[in-house]
Image 1 (cartoon, one colour):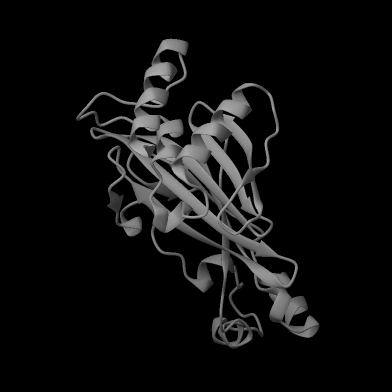
Image 2: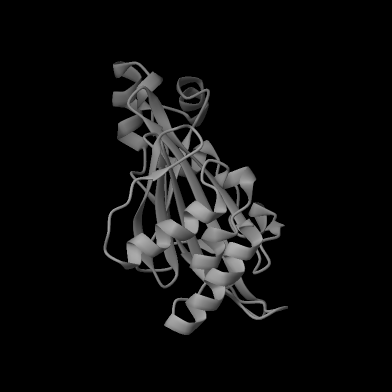
Length: 222
């Protein structure tokens, strides 16, 4: 039944100019199709037919609080030709960005973020090809280390080893851009670090790391 619904929606989308499907064997994908076909390992709380309905309501300029598997509500926050952001639960958000992959069609970047008042925001980045086959994340963004978020001048009384002791469990919040091919990363650790250590960290911590898509991977902006 779900497969039939998806097929019918793809036909209707083609007739109305709303892109849900790509030609068989295509190496390109629309962000809408990526949202609908997102694997359950990422978007198990919203079933496929509900995702289709969410897009229809969004296109009709209707803010629909869609039911999810936790008996809560999910909502589409933003949809552009190559970007979708959905609030899955009160504490979880999913961003999807379709990027041109030089010589290979499209790559789908997915950012899943857990955020709450009682814990540090923490994100996971994953990447897929146009058939929604998962690809190694390290191929598209060099894994970040704690030292990447700090700039310690030579001769400083504070060392990187001391900062590692202050931040034993670093968490990172990523954000994909809706209106560009940029990515930002922010170290989020203040929720479990004492105030004295926070003051020291703020002396050396970079507020944000910026990355730009070069057609093959995200490269840091200097």
